[in-house]
Length: 144
Length: 144
Length: 144
Length: 144
Image 1 (cartoon, rainbow over the protein chains, first blue to last red):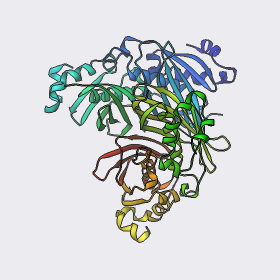
Image 2: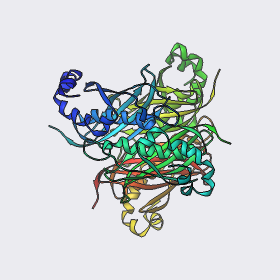
Image 3: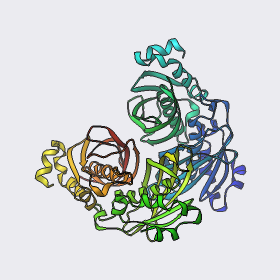
Image 4: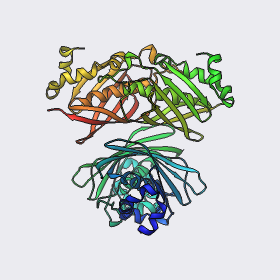
């Protein structure tokens, strides 16, 4: 995914951050997991991830660690869009086994001068809630 | 890693669970991440993970999602040793960036009839605390 | 607050649970903290709490423990309405100091056969977000 | 509890912080809940709390909100001893009902320049684990 593919997925007021988003998106681990960006606006980032054979757990379903990766990448995009930040903590709950491609929706709960807290949820293709989480980012540097 | 390599790493009272441990260890996602088992006893499981190029974040350090994978695999081994279970929730905190191979130590906090809660911590090669977490497993079936 | 005062605050489909709600509401600790029920429906319970002098912390604001009490009581009402349950875990984040009466809104995130997870948020009188939390209840017995 | 009663409970290297500890201890909500300090050292603070009739839940046991108050007060003492701070988040798990006086032990997990994270556990008189938690404080100002 390059600038030309990403820009149409971004709301007008977020297009100025396209390079910051691409930077997070290009992280080797995000690329390795096959992260896809679906939609970006100031108050919602939607990503998705296809299931690959290496992501499976010992019961033949998507491993919690792979679901977490999708959560973490989506959180990284929304929390780094307006400032440089780093993940400080995540609380994640898993509700049902997953065996389809997954969609992830991240929304801000509260962003202060130093910490940004986001609600991040993962859904199956049928729209079932697979996992929900609260992700906290430490804000290192506000951008101009 | 096979039975013969694993058994010497297990305390006497856990050797009976060697096949259950191998089963969790053999999960495609654990193999993909290069999980290594260091030591298994009833009250402590130690694993490690080498850093691979695909695990890197946009700042050139180990991605939180990769650190989480190590936590989740180590938790899966300790929580599935005595019963069939499934991950219900994890609260994880990240303390400092990681760029070396990582070691992970899981210990039980409280195990009831239906839920097992574990303290799981990740250390750098120099012994610095990289991340700490509390992992909760839902117990599906007690084994005989 | 008795049955006659509570019923008008309940949606039609929840009125059948009025005695269960009164039971939780009558807990000594809920009464002691001055819990008030504002509104009850299947997918939202709203409570409030006035600030009393004994609830103050060493900086002269509402103590986090008092804010937590409001969260816990509101969660207890929504999670015990349809079944007998007990609190299993809570993750709470505090965003800003509070010095006014507080309002608390609880909504279900996911309710399975054995665990109910709820999003519970606390607001100041001016509508500022004071705290947000995820509360998990263990379901002991489904009612008929 | 005054300076003269508190000092013998403090290790040599913490006695210089006696006034800071008394300040947190004197918070109206801590006094109201009957907080007692048992022992203070750099790497462990132990408090206790007697059960009072107003702390009871609808099942006749100690209310989770009262247990949380003990956790929060003990955390406030350890996290404010060396610097001014404020509670940022807590993840708490409840393991068994409590009906005796309670003891609470807080230990540091990791303290950085801006955040202090502590392990805080609550025990019954018989030494059973009632609840465990991870408490995070935001450091406002380092003291000299």
